[in-house]
Amino acid sequence: MLSPRYCLVASLLLIHFLGFSQSKYKLLVDSARLYTKSGKYQDAINLLFKAKALKGIDKNYSERINMHLGNNYESLSKIDSSIFYYGEAIKFCESKKDYPALSFLFSRLGNIELSFTKRYPTAISYFKKQLYFDKILKDSTYLFDNLNNIGLSFKSLNKLDSALFYFNKVTQDPSKFNNSKNTALLFTADIYSLKKNYNSALANYKQAIKGLALAKDSIGLYAAYANIGDCLMQQNKFDESIENLRKAEKYLSPYITDANKAVLYHNFAYVYGQQQQFDKAYYFKNLENITKDKINTESIGNAIAEMGAKYELRQKQDSLFINKQKLVLANVKTSQKERNFLILLIASIAIIIFIFSIYRIRQLRYKNTLQQKQAEQNALNLMHQYQLSESELKSIRSQMNPHFIFNVLNSIESYIMENDKRTASRLIQKFAALSRLILENSTKSLVTADKEWKALMLYTELEAMRYAGAFTYAFEVDENIQLKTTYLPPMLIQPLIENAILHGLIQSDKKDGHLSVNIKKIENGICITVADNGVGLNHKEKPSRFADIKEQSLGLASIKERIKMINKQYNDCASFTLQSGADSKGAIAVLCLPVFEEQELRGRLSLDG
Image (cartoon, rainbow, N blue to C red; front, side):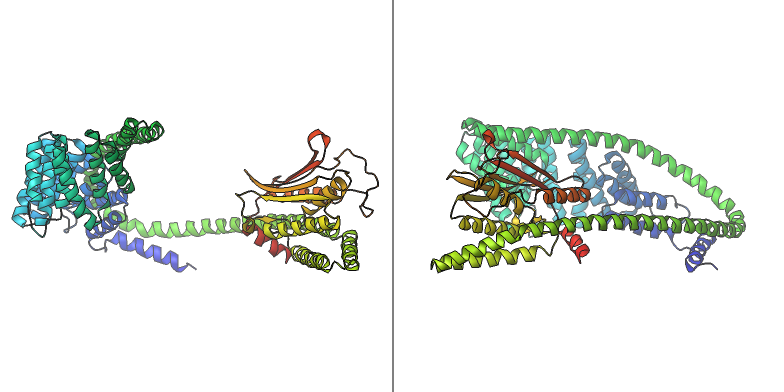
């Protein structure tokens, strides 16, 4: 029995081939508009060409589609294609006397000639045509922008008086629709700066800043302060120039072009060089060079894109003609397709069902194989976890060994007998805190480093008190490590400290015994170093002045076993080394571990549970 999904697909195909769809042109154009709004310009172009192929077929077809094509090509910086389709749209809009559309089209063509092709006389011609239609439409808002664009075109031709004439038209017009006055003031100031009339330039820049600040126009404020800095630099007023260049730097944003950034960095470098602040000058010169390299790279990319666009334009024009011919042939063959469609549909459904059945069987086999492999991997992980847990249990037993507990209790008793209640109380409190931390940590496979670090410090302090200050100690943490967010296996470091005290420092007759414990960040994890200046590794132990010292090294086998288990789970990221200190005095133990993430901690806890 066929599923509802296959029935729906078959129905849609049947409707399509029978030609019941309504206004395909409008549907394609509306979809293209949605793509344009979301920035998917190439997808929009593809749909628009499908719509363009419906010329003479769909009664809703309109040559205004060329306007949409030109707009999308302009957004992709494919300038030749954009100019071509804007030109086609102008022919249609002129025949329909569509003045708003003509104003828009001449505005776009003028901006393309001004910003991309640099054909400034052509840009002026287009902007003046736009000005004609703006006056017909009485559109004051775009009128002022247009006057500024004409002024910019004359400025690019170095016709400064003509440019100033158009900018003054904007700055002197009190119309409430004049939203371009601040921009015109900036352009006016630029003209005076080029004429080396710096006083007039600075006056216009400052007047523009007032309006730009009220409008919160960060791009305009950047340009104003940067150009004031340039004017002052030209007058060798370097302190004032730097002050304004720094103000401009505050308004740097992704909307500032790389070319403008390069000019700012150049001016910074020049002014600092004149003030003999060569380090700052060198810094901004490097920024200038980097920005210019970026501009050159983008220019090459744009040139390549434009060459591709020219080829694409020719290809599209050819394909439109071919598509029209194909549509004629398609109409002739429509009846034959309708007759053969039902036969093809039945055969296709049978083939799809057969292929789906084979695919489903293979999927089930593949899924079964994956489940078997996953089960084997889980079993291996559980075995590693079991071995690691056994190793951790051994570490717990070695850490809370009866000798240590007995000796601490004896020390407490001796202080009580000597009526030193305060020291005895401190010993009891620290011993209780240490016992509680060890019991808490022993229930987890990973604990936060701050808890483990606290336990190690308590243990060391108890040993120092027990041996009546026979050694000093220091704990250091790398400033790049956050103990509260770092995780460590519990009871892995304590045996190293115990060995350093009992088999190194206490065995020595020196009175300046010192234990150093530090943790630092490395490239792929952390390293804990335990160092002492005791008797060293090659010393044969002799009866100590303290009678309760163990005769053999503690926990090293357990540590090596746990390192081995960790490496099985974390790809050999852990290591342990033990070596003599300088001149064979003392010992240095280094334990390196991977960085255990919080999500790994949760996974380990779920296995522990």
